[in-house]
Image (cartoon, rainbow, N blue to C red; front, side, top):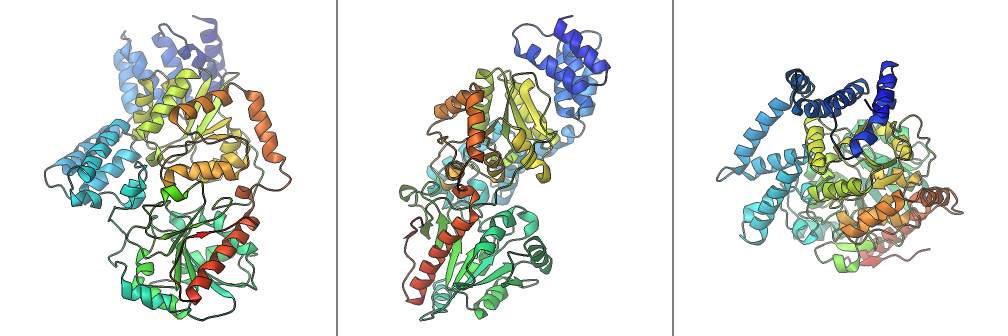
Length: 561
């Protein structure tokens, strides 16, 4: 028995399984044969620390070495994976329904969503390639009715294809008569701009108020008459409670029980100059309200970062990094570019507390807290390559379903790095503390940037992101730039790996970045909602001014104050 194994056994026997596992992990990183006893001890440590999927993984490895305990270990792994057999049977049924001749688009979509959530990365890539081939080479019109726009951009970095998806959460299509009627609502009006924000269900977008409330608080009440449109009375009350100061002189409106046509009619009666939809194609969004004609100017801000397919939208609010002029060709709506970033939150100081996993000394903890649906095979291959080249690196993910976790571990084991994958508690209330406990953040590729990226940057943790071709693939680059850290977004996959490795090998640079994050004289744009609000106000006034003069929407570029 090696010294490391002896010490690990001692820690385990003394009730310190996390410390025992930390001693075993370097053993797995070494070349050479690992005996069954070591795998069993690692599995027992994982059971004690709540990592059942990793435990099953180690017991499977021990069983594969044979010996008198093989059947017992295999059965133990099966017990820990209880439920995955039923999931695999369900998978077979979903696959058969989706791939049979003449399969309905809805069956294909359900299967594809399940693949993403289950982290069946290779199968998902094959299905994406098959669907893309139908779109580009077979001229199959039904292929554009499979993915919802919010699902399509999770894997497609092509906004040209993203814009051609026809599955929209409304039976009401945009119409020219409705567009003409709504644009006449504010003709020749003067005075303060009547501005409304349209929210989707807060239960489906719990982080939305984090971005909206600071903007509401900083709005100029003399220049703007403000309203917030909520889906339910409960949501309106939640906005009021969470944003007492922000909601002063703000009208809170509930659409309780109103269908799209009735909701649009109710909003038209209020004669808003500008209605800003914060959902777009996000789950729970109400594109039918916009298509029925709700306000003179209808704009999209936040929500799903992609073309407003099937929606009557005049403007999409972005910034020059997220949506540069050369990337705007797929957008029917006009683009309004803010100068320093298109979103901001209030800064906060968060302590990591006890959230950091127990790891070997000198370890580098890479945090990747994206939802499973955003993790493509392309992203996972990069992460696997990173761990292969960074022996001291550990990948920290959000805990997903049992089935998804074991699928991801097996994918990473193909590169020999599954031992250094850790699943953490995904509760939103712990996310900021976990972000502060990380060393380096890793972004996903096709759909980049999210609330987890903001939390990492707020903690001064550098985020490695790749500047892609689509809006969704460039959000991470936009957030990183707006955070004011001296780290550039990568321009290629090789650049992504190089940056991650450079940061991993230079702890002094990481410390300097954290000091830089705390040492700004003025908050950087990502953490300066007052400045963002000032730029938004210039944009909304320009939109209203054009509409009041009877002019058609035109591209806008707001200059920094």
